[in-house]
Structures are given as structure tokens and as C-alpha cells.
Length: 124
Image (cartoon, rainbow, N blue to C red):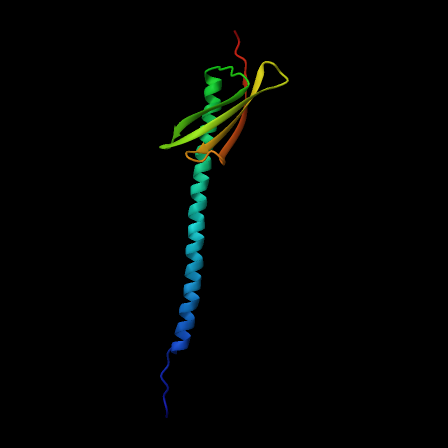
């Protein structure tokens, strides 16, 4: 009786390793994209906080800003952000619209967050 050794051939092993390499490459790429998306989402969330803080500051101080554009900077989560607000008149003379755009430091072309709100004229 003739017994045959069982096992994988070299060709089968190489094919299995090629399939494993393709699967691992796809998995690492997906993890990289996920990490990048999480970073961008975090940046946008913090930008939203900066915009909300700016509107809350206008309301809390009962500021009555004149129409026009103002710029400033804010520190949030250990990073510096630039904000730009555009104040516009509304049909109601007692209310002004404020559009706040937030930019990451060093990038004044692409806003990471935008928020609109209204401020009322304080009673005198």
C-alpha cells in the first residue's frame, strides 16, 4: 500500500498568503480612513463650539453689534481657532442676524463650522 503525505503545496501556500495580504491591506486602509474621518469630525465639533460660544457671548453681554464683519480668535480644546462674524440687519429693527464662520488656524479659506443666530437689542 502506498501512502501519500498530506499537506499544502507551495502554490496553495502562496495563493493563501496573497489573499491574506490583500485582505490586510484593505483592513488597514479602512482603519486609516476611519481615523482621518474621526479627526475631521472632532475638528468640526470643536468649531461648532467656538461658533456657539461667540453667539452666547454676544447674547450674554447684551451686545448690539453694528452691521458689518468682525474677526477674532478663540482657544478651544488646547487649539487656536479664528472666527469671522457677519452682522446683518433684519426687517425687525430690534433684531440683528449674526453669521459666524470658524476656521482652523492657518486656514482662512475653508470654514470648519458655520452657525447663524439672532441677537435682540437690549432694553435701555
